[in-house]
Amino acid sequence: MNTRMRRAAVAVAATTMAVSLAACGSAKESGDKTKESGAAKGDDITIGLLLPENQTARYEKFDKPLIEKKISELTNGKAKVIYANAKQDATLQNQQVDTMITNKVNALIVDSVDSKAIAGSVKKAKEAGIPVVAFDRLAEGPIDGYTSFDNEEVGHVQGKALVGALGANAKGGQIVMMNGAVTDPNAALFKKGAHAELDGKVTVGKEYDTKEWKPENANANMEAAIAALGKDKIIGVYSANDGMAGGIITALKAGGFAKLPPVTGQDAELAGVQRIVAGEQFMSVYKPYAPEAAAAAEMAVKLAKGEKLDSVAKEKVDSPTTKGVPSVLVPVVSLTKANINDTVIKDGVYTVAEICTPKYKAACDALGLK
Image (cartoon, rainbow, N blue to C red):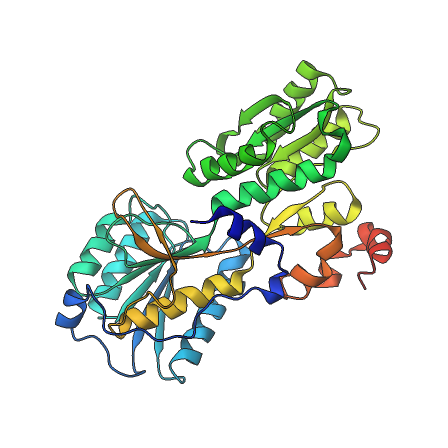
């Protein structure tokens, strides 16, 4: 994978990003099982869609309708989508896979609650001749395709943004690194990418792996860092996501910082975007849902028809159980004050009214968010 090329892609605005989804493949090379089950011909296919939970707004508000819309477009409105949400219950999701097998769907898109726990169900689907696309999280088992965001690149984007924010002051003090939970494999990738940008350019005074990604744990870690390093020595904070950034900024305020140092984030959460508007958080990482959903839909339709994915999936990713999974890794965008209008607002993630509540109205007006 060419990291420099991927890093260049990040600079492109979200609305100009595209995933190459148009070309059609030929008969599926490893599709013996699929062919045995009678791979669908034409557009009259059935796709199963399993999402992990409904507490996070993205799944019901964005992922589900975007995937359904793209499948409909790709099949002239003839395909059927069977949907189920696991509500953060891995056992329930395994049962939902069983139901999809019983319903004889032609392909299955799964965003796993637990990437390890789903492996047995993925194998059962494969044995039944149903190809599986792992969506957003790299499920274990014999999956046929995978789409997500480039998690290592997320760290590169965060680290590069922090170095840029520090500018000539990069060697004038120390930064604190607030990584995610050690139990999350994605956190290790964020950390790796961030270190690639930060090492040699800044001095890391304190670094933490934050238990369960909890903002209160990040807050406690930041308080400890301030006590150990002294507020006059801290010039910036790498935070792996927006939730932790909120806890960090609370600690910085309580620690008596006259001016807040730049703090990174990820996910473009509403509270994070509002902090960016207010000048409290320097940046977040925006992950556009539409290209990810489109890639999942394209792969599922092709697999349902017994076609190869090489025209869609240009990269290969290894899971702990499967090597060389055809993959689409969607570029991410560094979200700052400068591009709020052209990203989360333009893409319909948030309205100006949602961001610009009375507390943030003056800051919004100054940025021209109206």
